Length: 166
Image (cartoon, rainbow, N blue to C red; front, top):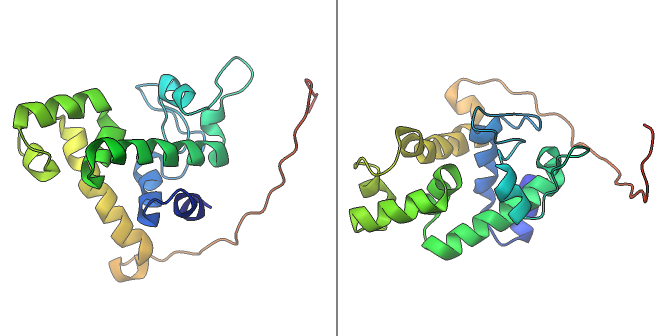
């Protein structure tokens, strides 16, 4: 589903593996920074990309809506930086931190920026971790992992127009 959504958005399908680093594909993941869901959206970023978050619902945990929001966000980040490594770094650290790092380092080369103190260690390791996830997740047996692939999950979406007791 993730690869399909990214393909439809015109993104490289391998970016789907970012969710492995973000949350291990757990839809209810919650970070100490208050990021939530499989794509670890902060509430303000989620709202910017159309995810509702209130007392009753938190669409950051809706894997379908959050995946579409993540695709839109990544597309915007790539448009901003013109580089997938910087886009991934900005997804982790935020655009402001990456903008400042690019300005201070006077380069748009993520690997050169990663050798400076302009970004946090977490962000320096985030991009290589995603690249490792892509390699391992695409061919786990080559790296000593045994994986049972589950059948594709099917679901229905139902729109309701008022509060409903479930």
